[in-house]
Image 1: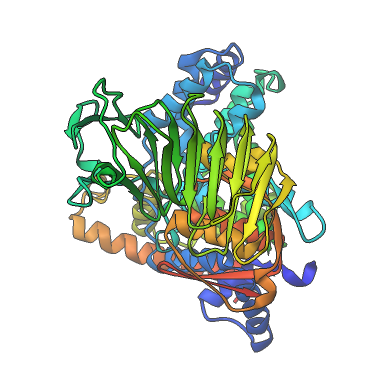
Image 2: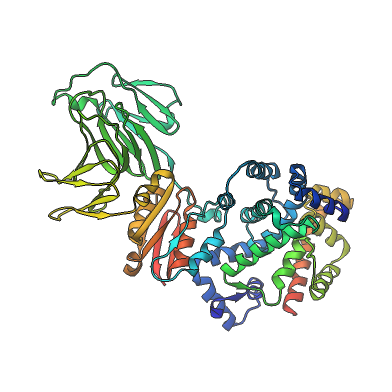
Length: 396
Length: 183
């Protein structure tokens, strides 16, 4: 442990050019050990070279308001402290854990960001709506809050991060040939998330890089949507009309329920996780339906003869919906795929070893990306190199 | 800064959860503590977090504060521990307390039970600076006055105050180097 430590005085001398070759070697070992070491040294160097510290003022009134809010709240002590950064506590807790997989808890909710050059902002409410059979694209940002607009003969409203389709009284007769005319698609870009309420009252939470196509206005026959990406469904019960989530890797048929479907084109699998109720999964071009009970997940890899069913922690599988990113014994490559979608990053693994490291844990997904980097670096022998949106990961 | 008696009166009111007393504490103590934390993190935003957490912790653990102790010192202990953790996490050691001296010098925060040796180091550094330079540096860095205000108080042009400041910083760096490095 001692070998890893460096004297502050040595850093000071490095800045002033008073350093021996052996010390330089020691410095380089420390410098190479973690990006946060390099950031710290650069900040220290800047401070010592320009020397003008006396120009920053925090907004004291804002800090007082935060304090008053805490004084007036009745939050239990532990929760209240999470309001602000306790990141070093978290990192130290991590270091104390042993083995390959490490549990990190959601205490990281910091508002402070890493140095500007390193700040990678999380995603937010972003979506576009494609209506009129692909003829018209509406950026949800351009829609007025709470003001209904008429699209394809249906009324829809944006409110609190959700698009709601009104349940119209007119029954639109749908024949197979004309059905296409009424399809709408909502597309969520990388770094986005959005909510949708269909005319029947079904609610859908859409994750980053996801598109969902659905017919509008139809009031008879099967209810269906076509999904690419990840979405959580809270299906409005309607015993007469089953609800089907179609994907290129099979159908998930629903019997009034809450569940999550993950089917990203970049991955070779589909995952459907059942929270409540009952769903059934059918492979493309097959008649065999696999039924699922709550707390279980269907996993189907493209090319396999059939799906497998396993027990999972549903909170982890659906955490993204409540602003959390949770992983349970997932490989770093899988975790990075999720983070890349949310933070809009390009990720390259320089060593295969790093790809297969297994992590568990959860963290608020509105924290900046750098917090994740710190946790990964603190709990495994890996290093992240970040240049703009490009992230390179290598084993140490 | 508050006088000794004001600080003690404030402590008693803090203990009684007096909201106004906390507000006064913010206005009087937040900045010096943030300057202190900033010398450890070299990051204003992070320093702000550390001090805000110390205030939160004081409120949430009010049963552990007895109302008699200097409340500024009480907060400083929390901030200092967090700063030491910060350094530990960066794998930085401060065996000869050079970092501490640098911090005290730039934040003008007084340690409650200051080691006489550190006090001596501080005094030596300050004494080594010519008067005008010292005033310019301390009015600007420690009292956080704008350069125009510093110029007014020194009764010189702003450009002259600027020159005093720059030279002062240079002297400070050189002398601190001398004191820290002994060369």
